Each structure stands twice: as structure tokens, then as C-alpha cells.
Length: 431
Ligand code: NAP
Ligand code: HSE
Image (cartoon, rainbow, N blue to C red; front, side, top):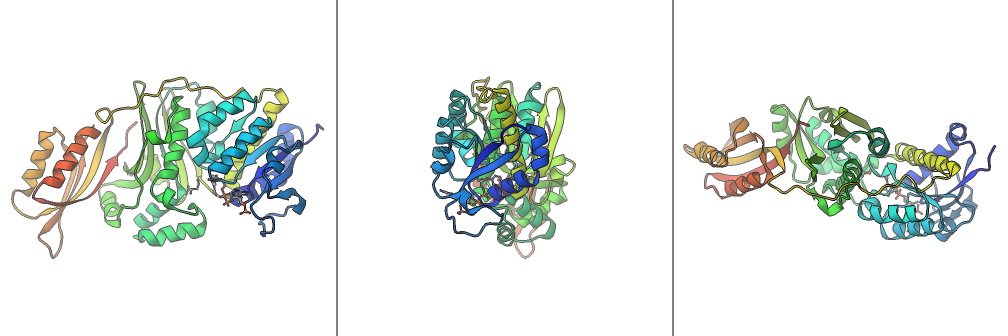
């Protein structure tokens, strides 16, 4: 048998512990794949005295990052410490020391992925990051390899488990937002500061990574339009259900004639759409390719062992590349220049919930405004609001441009008969 391959790990928290469990627990299968044992040489932690959830020889723990990235015994560095500044610095050091790198760090890859991939290539090293999007779902490998012969035109993803868990519980059990967020934190899906989950930033980072790969175009985080779920109410969820829709936090990446849009926002999907059935903390990515048609990839988006599975699979790929002497060759520069759609080119249907004066003329003011913009209604619901002189109107529009919709939205707020626009969401469903 060949000499073993040694791994250095930056971080031994939820994911790092899973990596050690998989490397140790699946050694027989791993040897069969790569032809030699895998050993863990050094592991960076903040505090070596902290109790650990996996058994590890104390001598392997270190509080000095250079013991990992500059260690002559280490062949591959696995970065599972999170954060941006130090993680970036240590990955750069590892690549400059000619170590291959595997990371689960979506924050880092969404912001500095292009730069790090270039550096990896210059050093003939691999840099893989499957676990950075949708934890245990091999979606990056699917885009880069499985669907590489096709032209992808649309991706829609439920790529944040925390928000999917919150919306599922609010919708199914009428639970309050705060109550369910607390439950998600206790169950460990949410980030330590859940702001990036609920404000949509975590999903935006993942969509920037997916869009870059799926469209072979450098999509930056700031190209992603982001809206989280903090304003979603149980009333909204109730009306969606009544109209045959499910409200999810959806990352949308769409390409038409070479121009793309990427966004993350609460979105209504028809109940029969495959993403509508993705509940609780599960993730799924729907991919439409011109040749293949509709595909969908479903699974756990977080958690120690699911995420570690993706990391160790990346490690297997790196080891196979090392054996063939081809590390650093799989990294390709984007094929297309970035071209983002304008608001006149982004088309969608919309859901609106209005509180209006319950009197003659209200309805005609609203319909006139929509007619003026040449938008018709697909669905409409009007209900009195008990013990008030107000009514609630729920509208689902036909397809229109984002530009026109934003204009209507502004004008609705200015109408005397409209007391408030309570909520407004994008509606999806097609390819
Ligand atoms: P975590 O539980 O907080 O673990 C972080 C580990 O890194 C800890 O062992 C910590 O040491 C160590 N660490 C952090 N900063 C350090 C520093 N400056 N110097 C030395 N050690 C440091 O995090 P996690 O949940 O495993 O997540 C790790 C990465 O995986 C993140 O990038 C995350 O976004 C990504 N990810 C996580 C999941 C998931 O389900 N958790 C899923 C997909 C991707 P101590 O233990 O001594 O504090
Ligand atoms: N906080 C993230 C989520 C963890 O809820 O999906 C996985 O990236």
C-alpha cells in the first residue's frame, strides 16, 4: 500500500468533528477509493483545553495556524474554522506552501473565491469547496461535472436551512417567528449570529457561488439582490396557502440571452412545484438546463456529518488528482463576461396584500392603476377586516417587469383608498 496522505484541519467545531469521524469511520472505503490511508496530522483550535465531541490525541491539537499550513507532513489543509480574515490568510499560506485546500467556507468563497482559485492554480494546487453550498448536497460537483455539457438557464434554491425551518413551522403550525428562530438556534442550524440567515445573506453567498459556476460568469455578492424573511407574517402564509401557493426563501439565478439576474427573496411557488415540498431544515436546488430540462437535488443543507461528507469527498478528489499529478488543473476561468439584467428585463408575477378603505370606488381606483400599467390580475381575493372600516385585498398579478411593478408599488402607497401595502412578494413557477 502507498504511503498515507496527511491532512491538517483548521477548526474542530461542528464540521471539523464530523470530518474526523468520517475519516476514521470510513477508512476502509476511503482506502479503496484512493489507495492509501488518510491520517489527521494537526488540528487548529482556539483553545486546546476545551472539551471535544470527538476523541483526538492531545498532541495533534495546536493553537498555532502555521503548525497546520506550514507543516511539512501535511498534504491537504481542510479549512472548517469559518470567518473571513484569518481563514483567508491561512488558506493563502497553505496554497503558498503548496498544500491542496478543501473548505466549507461560503462567506469566504462568495467574497474572495476568484482570487483564491487563481492563487491555487498558480501554485498547482487544488481548492475545492463543495460543502460551502447546501452542506450535504453535491450541487457544486453536479454543476461543474454532471451538467457540464448543458447550458443552464435557471437555478432556484432553498439554500438556507434556518429560514426554511422557520417558514415551515410558521406555515404548518402557525408558530411565531421569534419562537421558531429560537428553536432553530437550539437545534444548531442557525449561524451563531442568525442575522445572516434571516436577512438572506447566507443564502445570497451560496447563490453567488452557484450562479458563478452554473453560468460560468464571475457573479459577485453585491450582484445578488437580497431580502430576508423578517417581515413575513403568519397572515401572508395563510393567504398563500388559500391561493394554492407555498412561501419559501428562494435564491433565483436566471439567464436569458446571456444576461443574468440573481436574487434571494421570499417567493411564492405553486404547491405543485417540487421546491414547495422541501420542508423543515432541508435544502434543495432546482436546476433547469436547456438540454436536460428540469432537475432537482435535495438533502440536508447543514449538520456535522452531512457537511463533512462533502468535505471528505472533496478530499478524495484531491487525493486522486495528487496521484495523477494533476492538482490545480480543474480550475477554469469563467467563459462569459458578466452581464446583469436591468429592471426592465427582469420579469415575474407578484403577490400583494393591501389594507384598503371598505367603500365604493376603492376597487376601481386600484384596478385603474393596474390597467394604466397594462397588468392584469391572475388571482384576487377581498375580505372585510372585522370591527374596522377596512378590507383586505390579496392580488396575484400576471407577468410584468420589475421596473413596472416597482412603479405600481410606489403609486399604490400614494392612493388615498389604500391604507397600507402590508406585503409584497415575487411569485415563481415556470422555467
Ligand atoms: P464552529 O462549530 O464554530 O467551529 C469552528 C472551529 O474553528 C472551532 O473548533 C474553533 O476553535 C475553531 N476556530 C475558529 N476561529 C479560530 C481561530 N481564529 N483560530 C483558531 N481556531 C479557530 O463552526 P462550524 O459550524 O463547524 O462551521 C465551520 C465552517 O463550515 C464555517 O465556514 C461554516 O460556514 C461552514 N459550514 C458549516 C455548516 C454547519 O452545519 N455547521 C454547514 C456548511 C458549512 P474552538 O473549538 O477552540 O473554539
Ligand atoms: N446557517 C446555515 C443554514 C448553515 O441555516 O443553512 C449551513 O450553511
